[in-house]
Every structure is written in structure tokens, then in C-alpha cells.
Length: 340
Picture (tube, rainbow, N blue to C red):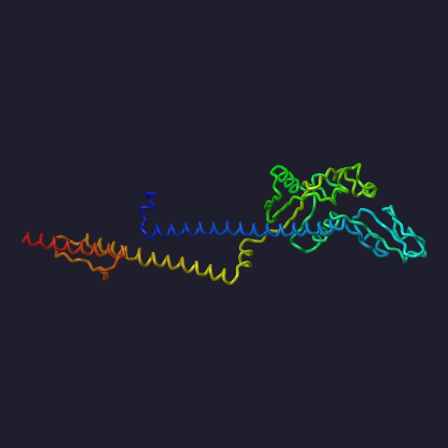
């Protein structure tokens, strides 16, 4: 600290300015990163909202049924049960077979009159939408998972296990973290009445669920209506801080930043021109005054014009030093006269 105090005021001010610039750069980086995380987190919440809305839409109908045309028997993907209806002289029937082509379950003459419907509960609807999002170019991906699942394809990954544990321990409804350039977000899902039909217990599970091997993963039961059952997991890439800030600033924002930069420049100019420069002149005056020889006629060094009415502290100091010079000159004149 003593070493810094011995430096010139210009040097001290330059060092202070450098420190302030570094601190400002770090602060802008931290604040910018925080804003990016907050913005991305809100995007994650919006994606989770959408997933919840899809589930609620399906739940209000008790699930949905998808009609598949002839020749595309596998287009339905995952489903709970399949119903095959013959529209000719065949009676309407329910097919319990999951492997056979449903269009061959009726007489040849009525195959063109067959309609096949695959039932899907809200979770399957959400799952298929998440599969579409995963296969798309969309940045946001989401899926539903739980500690115990019917379908092992829905088993949680390491982050989702961490989120499930954190939510269960804290009682919070959401959890998130940043992994590399990805924001991972999880929201607790509460079991609705429509969920209990399939997720109550293995013994009470519907027959079509037991018959479909893709839903016999050894778990997914024990749900309680109104209680947490799993999570919606969302993954969104984090944009670069500078890119995100530049793209999010409006014209007013850029003008505000420009005004801030101009204000900083004005402050620097004020300190340099109204404080450091006048103090430098006063210092040179005092040094010249101290180097005047006693034996010669004392000459008071010149000092820039000073406004005697100024209230500026630097101007008052210069005026006081100037008067001190005049007092010293009078004293030296008397000393010289006394010697003669």
C-alpha cells in the first residue's frame, strides 16, 4: 500500500481505472451469464408448461384413440390396446392380439371396410410429442420419467435421477442445473385421476397393459392421486452470453449503454482536466518556488490565471500557493535588504 501511495496521482488514477475496468468486465460477464441462465430457465419452464398442457388435454378425454389406415399397421407406435372394427357384415370387434396385422383379423371381403384404432393415455401422447421434438431441429427437448417406469425406454438418466432425489428431499416442484452449454430443467409431475387406472398396482393393472410386453418393465406402479409421480425433464442449449445479450437488446437498450459509456468518458475527462492537470501545475509552481536562489532577486514563478471567486478546491489550493509565493518573495526581499 505504501508503494502505491508513493506513485504519482496520474499513475494511481490509471491503476484504479484499470481495476475498475476489470471489475466492470467481470461484473458484466457474471450478470450477463445470470441473465442468460434466467432466460433459458424460463424457456425450460415454458416447454414443461406445454408438456403439462398436452397431458391435461389427453386426460380430459380419458386418453385418445388414433385411427390408422390400411397398409400402415405399425404407424401407431406405442399404444395401450387396439380395436378393430369391421364396417361391412362383420360385427364390431375388439382385437386383443398385439402382434398380428389387424387388417387380417376380418374376412378378406371386408378388409377395405376395416378401421383400426389404437388407444393412448395422456403419458403416451406426451411421449410421442417428445419423440417428435427429439427428432426435430428444435433446440428444446423434453421427456417424462420417474424412479419407477412401466417402459424401460423411459428410465431416468443421471441428471433426472439427481433431480428426482432433489425434488423428493426438498419438497420443491422444480430443479435445474447447467451442464456444459446445456441447461437441464426438471419439474415435478403430480399423478392425476387418469393416471391411476394404469399405475395403481400390478395386480389392478388393466389386462391390455399386462398383455403388452413393452409396458412390463417391472415398475411404474404405486401412484397416488394428487401426489408426485415423476418429472418432466427438459434440455435446452445455453447461448453464448455476448450473442444472447446482443440479440436481446433493443434500440433503447443500445442507447442506454451508449449513454453509460459517454458518462464514463465524461467523468474521466473531468478528473483529468479539472483535477489532475491543475494539481500538476500547482506542483510545478511549488517546485520552481523551492528552487529559487536566496542570493539572487527572488522571482515568483508564473501560475495560470486563477479565478479568486472560484469555490473549486483545486483553484483555492492554487490561489493559496500563489499567495504563499508572494509572501516568500516579500520575505526574501527583506532578507536581501537587511544584508545590504
